[in-house]
Length: 330
Image (cartoon, rainbow, N blue to C red; front, top):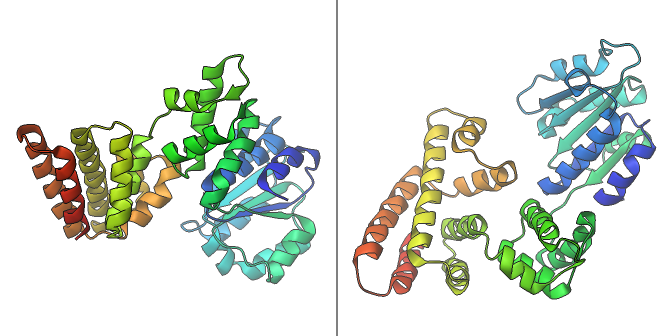
């Protein structure tokens, strides 16, 4: 069963005591969690029936106390969601196995994990009484097909060339692709099919995505990929000076996040201060691991120098950008 089949069926059977969503595609996990909440809590007051924890920083005893405790209101069901649950599962595997032999009737438990070993006793018990759904990132060659299918959820169709154009312009972040499909569906009005022209008119290249991908290529010291992304931005009419400014903005955010973490702060603190979008957070911090604070300080200085020269010099700024990419990757 895939995530869309699950979302369509979850409201039909509310008897399952446990749901496990695992994998690295946060958008699919978001869809799954939304479906569970809407199906199980649509008639309940969520402030009293929904309990959400992060398994990597919440003691197991606290979570199990909530699972076993009945709702304050007789007959009301409780939904307990544990995100980042990998550590919680490993530390409490035997307790979870014992719990699933006789789960609480008043509680529905949701575990969100990065990994889930289907060969374990816990997985077998979960699939016997509940359900586990893999939420895996799509391969690049499957993205346009997903766009064609997902457009139906916005009550529109999209041509194959338009779907590929959208992927080329926006990238592989499903949450952002979904937002653009939503905007396109509104833009179309009564028309039923999204065309390449519609994508060009409304979407263009997603700046946040391309700048993020560019800094990721730089962090990997992947000169060819960085130049490819840079040329894509220039081909789509992005101004050289604007690209430098956007790069400097992203590097400054990474630098500030590194300072927060090196100073003893948490990823949550950095996310809040820098207002990082939830769907970008995981990749943002993965990218951050590739940089040292010295790297970021150096790159920021290079970008500031290039920004000044691009606004005052008369030579080819596109060529200067290519030279800058080589320096950033060195």
